[in-house]
Length: 220
Length: 248
Image (cartoon, rainbow over all chains, first blue to last red; front, top):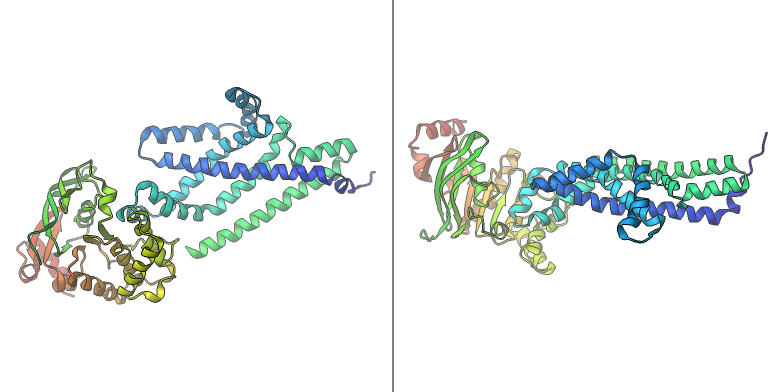
């Protein structure tokens, strides 16, 4: 039998805190970048110009057919080759997440755009707004509102997926905890703690999703 | 009324949806200040017809001009042209994420380049005109259908259009709300606005329409001054249509 000793957590709080900050920074930047690129891809996809929509469809199918861990791995080697100098694990991982998540976000955003009544676009165009203006001021705001819960659900998945960065040695929360666990021989305590932290954040966010879903359903 | 000024002109317009011809050799002219009612059975092409006037529905062949500017010419700036033609839709199509005032301001600011203040003043004046001043800050979902349609009319007028198109503006309304919308339209007609209205409201047609256009199977069957149309439609189909919608 062994005794559980959780004092290892406060003793290493600054290292763990750095890890949590890294996890959140990566998640946050990947969400923002993924949504921007995803919106762009969704607009290309619904454009009436075949070469643009085919490109977007190919992009989405390509990234959705690859395991995320492979994309992280590949870009870790590819990005420095492309830019011609070492860029560090963080940059390459961030690019990987943005490229990968954008494929998923673009499908969500496309569904969101399709959920807006066609008459809305007609009304926007009828008052003289250009296609881009109509998207910007009329269609996308409604689409994003309708899909906020799904986007948030995708963000929760992304938050969990950031733990895959251990393959390129980036010190996120999980890696930091693992370092402490191995060094101080407190594996059970540390991995219980890690599980608890992930659970609390994800569970709270999923409650948020439920609340938002309810509010949006009431409004529609 | 100055009957010489041609506002809308349509010449031999044809349009197909796949193999179905929805507009068949349609020609018409609307002078400045005229009010035209377009009626006909559902599926006769009347909504499609007025949507070709601001280019929302492209046509296969034929010519359409509004105030001398060609809609069918590919080099025409359609966005620019649409801003000068107001349109009111069957389902209102107010923007649900904006309040009433914002709905009326959007086009003014983004298309006409008016300042926030100018747009705001215009919105206030128009809301007063359609009798909805106290609803300025509400969202479309908080308004009745009749109120929403009046806001939609105000939104169209905010662009100071040279003509207004109405696509079945009262068809989606509960009966008790139809009149509040028609009243606004009658007022507009009497102020000299050029209007083309797709509607089955024959009371409205009788009261304010200069001419009635009757369509069936994508064709303009009759185009007659309204007193002639209601007196004795020349075509059997128009007579049959009128007897169906007037005799109850």
